Each structure stands twice: as structure tokens, then as C-alpha cells.
Image (cartoon, rainbow, N blue to C red):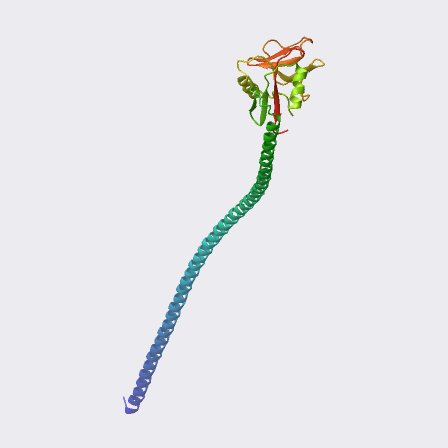
Length: 275
């Protein structure tokens, strides 16, 4: 080959070589670009996965936080409801206690009024008792003067005392009406026996003695005392008197008996301190 051909061939070879190098360079560039693109895509994928993971973690955390908050508020609500229920019960208990205290206060007020009224009654009774004692003292002085005035200095003159009463036991014998008149002159009356105790006292006072006229007679078929009260005790020595012949009563150590009013017996006068 001549020089010209060799030069052309060299030029072609160089051009081919340059083309090949250029192609290789382009290939390398394309590869690098592909690698770079792939790297960028990988980075982007990794970033996307990281974001997804973060979002999942945030979702889990948020869900957990929501659950915790719900549980907390549920427990707090239950606690508040329980506290409110306890406060309601306590309020009801306090209201009941307040009502009980009001009732107790009312009862105490009523009791205080009762005690005050009772105190007033006791004071009134004490005043009445003092007046009664004063009256009895005056009555006793009057009785002393009365006894001194009517004392005949006789050995058989006898006055005895029992339960706010003075009894005169005579030693003479008179009819029932005369015995009644004698008692009137002494400022007394024939004895009226009001109960079993008084009857037993007089029976002991005249023990071993005979009959004594008492202030009991029959008027219109009804036995009455001299103060017109009806006979309420029955202590007859024998059967209840039915005959109109015997209309006056006597007493003895054995009990009552009925006699003719014209017969003469001793008698018992009675002077009451309290009329």
C-alpha cells in the first residue's frame, strides 16, 4: 500500500478507534447514568419505605395513645361517677342525720316544755302544800283552842286522833238522835266511817267495849250517813238489816249492827281537820 492509502487507513482506524472509544464512553456514561438513576430510585424507595415505617410507627403510637387516653378517661369517668355516687350517698346520709337532729331537737324542745310545765306544776303544788301546811297549823291551833274550850275535865272524856280527824268516844248512854245532838254541841258530828282502815282503827279503839252509835241511819228504806252520802261499805255483824223497826246503826269491835233508834248506847263523835 502506498503512503496515501496507509494514511487513509490510519485515519479510518483512528476514526474507528475514536468511534469505539466514543461508543464505550457513551456506554459507560449510559451505564453510569443508569446506575445513578437506579441509585436514585433505590434511595427514593428507601426513603419511601422509611416514611412508610415512620407513618406506621406514628399510627401505632397514635393508636396506643388513643387507647391509653380512652382507658384513662374511662377510669377517670368511673372514678368520678363513683365519687359522685359516694357524695350522693353522703349527702343523703347527712340529710337523714339532719332530719334526725331536727326531730331530736323538736323532741328535746317538747321535753323541755314538759319539764317546764311540770316544774310550774310542782311549784304550784309546793305553794298549795305550803298553804295547806299553814292551814293545818292554823287548824291545829283552832283545834287546840276548841278542845280546851270543850274539855269538861271528866275522867271519861276522851278525844283520840287518826288521819286528820279527832274522835270523841263518849262514856254516857243516849239515843241515836240525842247522841247526834251532843256531837253537834261539840262542833262535831256522829262518826262517818269512810273505809275499812278507819273502821278497823275504831274497832281497836273500842276493843272490849259495847255498842256505839255511828252516823248511819235509814231514811226511806235507804241507809245514809249524816252527811247524806250513801253507805258504800258493808261490815254488818249479822245479815243486812231489812226491818223498818231498826233504822239506826251501831258499831263494835265485831263490826256494824242495826238497832232501834230509841235505844240508848254510847256514841262516837268525829271532828275533821280538813272539811
